[in-house]
Image (cartoon, rainbow, N blue to C red):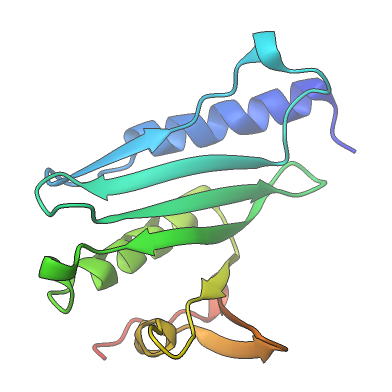
Length: 156
């Protein structure tokens, strides 16, 4: 288990990478700062980041960075991605995924994953497949993942 100081250093490093990252002019990123006054057991093992478009309704992505036992950021979970219905099929979602991949590489993450929406009314499975994610069905849950070292730039 990491010491308090090791966790603090990992978080400071991540915060600096996120602050220095170029999100462009039409996006904003909101990082959830860790508050030492509210901590009981030290740092959590994950860190939240929300990225949203400024001019495209409710269009955003929520990411969770996960810290491993050695103090590295080993995976990013896509908790939610929502593109306003007026702007779907315009490339905004793909751009958020590409941004997530670039940000993950900058942080040193080796895996991006999440749960795809897959029911009789809505499905995001095809979208994640087109973005290069591997899809895996686990009982009634549909998961997607991508290993960063396997990412090959392509025009799909």
